[in-house]
Image 1 (tube, rainbow, N blue to C red):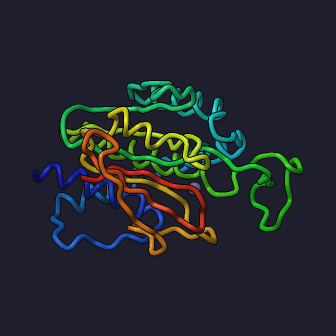
Image 2: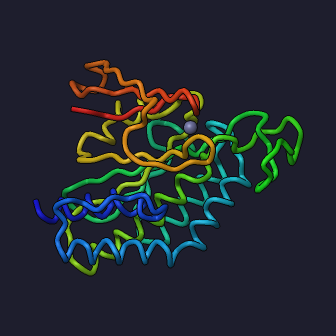
Length: 248
Ligand SMILES: [Zn+2]
């Protein structure tokens, strides 16, 4: 249980600390504090990779179900880092699930990867300035979540290896999120049935970053979709689209 808590704490705090917004866990101990500090340093050391992932997905700018280059790039990267990648899950060619480690807890970390129509935009420009007028583009930050998740997972993986902390890390993409295309199908096919915690990353409005349950979130439940498991559908008005998560 202690190791379970350690792993969850590391995971929850790594991305948050990256942006300087984490609050100290009330019941932290010296070892945990040290591990958290190491996780933060490890994320910082990987900032070039984080930027590369961010920029790569931005450049690919692929619409839902067409995330072919994003698929290739992310799955190759994760395989190189020792993850086992299951490709084309739920009958969706650009979907995948990458896992590393063994046993419990199983922590899933997800983020969307599709872009939106007619959002072509030059990077780093704060007014509308398309690269190609009318072309698709990342207008909602779906290029940034996997970057955050991957550097966080790599930091945690490194500590788990050294400290021999049991558990499984699972990374997954929200494919065709704008079309509400895949998350419910992952759940239906059982990919989340053994998940102990699912952490989802999405950039905020006005380039803001925060963590926790969004203030604008509307939660409602619909039962019996996945063999007795319940789904929670999260609607975020600012970003559009729907996010599905499993809850018990
Ligand atoms: Zn979104």
